[in-house]
Length: 520
Image (cartoon, rainbow, N blue to C red; front, side):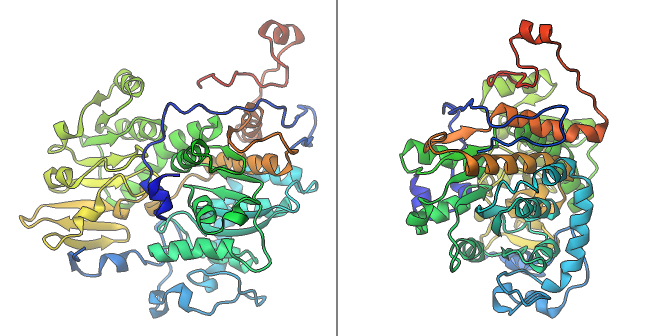
């Protein structure tokens, strides 16, 4: 474990994942799907800056994200949820949300999301009778949105007991958290948590009387980190960890290399159904949504710099280029840089273009990408935001100094004003902009959530010895199954191999159809 993790700092302080790490693959046949059957056959085993209007901390406590219900607030909204005595309509009190009275609004959002999450709903229908997660006690630490709620209720329908907190202090949809609490789920999350609140919520989910977690579903590695740091004996009793973010996966590999990972873990971030769809296709849409909602900007002719040309950077670059922006890219990886060149983007260094850009977007998964020296040289009106999981890519802390003025514009939008009058527009205080300032397409979350659910089922039901104390990729058979659950939405009809064709290719007619090293 790194020194940062030992000091209890957040997942965002971890640098970009070492690209030379070798993935541990497991090619065991996890489960079989019969194309002609409708049933799943399971073998699943510093000094404060000057502030105009409201303070920065106050701007972090707005009741609702722009992606959710925006009913009128009240004086009560300024009271910390931790200071309120709340109970749902059945007298249940094991939760802490912004306002339980808004549960009805959240339930409507969940119902909308269900309509656009066909794969996850199909898995719920097919596996509910078998209860493959019966006995599973899952700690969840992810973004809490309407789409996440569909996953939570799916896991419960499959037999799991659940306690859930947020992996980001800004991305929680308060009314959705209220709806889950109203349904009897122990939810500890609200939009605008402080850092102390953030860790308190995770601790409340872990350290509950009479409840021993045996599975972790993480996004960023914070629940895993906290459980290992504060409750090591409890951590050793966990059967498996499922992690979906670059940051969290990097932390798992660090633990594995240092010999501190004492339970099996599943890396679903690098499964095709996560990387290609959530990272590429989702970000291609959500970056535009976030920028439009917060700034009303027109992209045609704008000079845009994308830091990082991984799957997220590729999606952002495609979207902005499609609307007429002039897009440049920074990269450290020569292969990704060559891809950017072949896609028609200039590959530059930040210092070369920093004075001329209109929009700056980070999506590297690294730390200290945009420093104060860069921010000082940005042109007046430049929009600055981050699409990476953590808030370490942009050095926002360096902006909290007496000579700079923070001016709140709207929820999650701040002007940072220099003494000479220059101002930049900072979104979500440098945190994940698409989940802080916009919505994420439900359909693509369905793909990721189905992948997570299957990974949990596999680790929970795996016979002893199948998985060692290491990090594993999701078996390709599962990846293909997740994709197949979503194809009926498009009325897509797969071609089936003949026996002769399957023999010629050396494949099983039911898959998997590509080797693990295949790059989609």
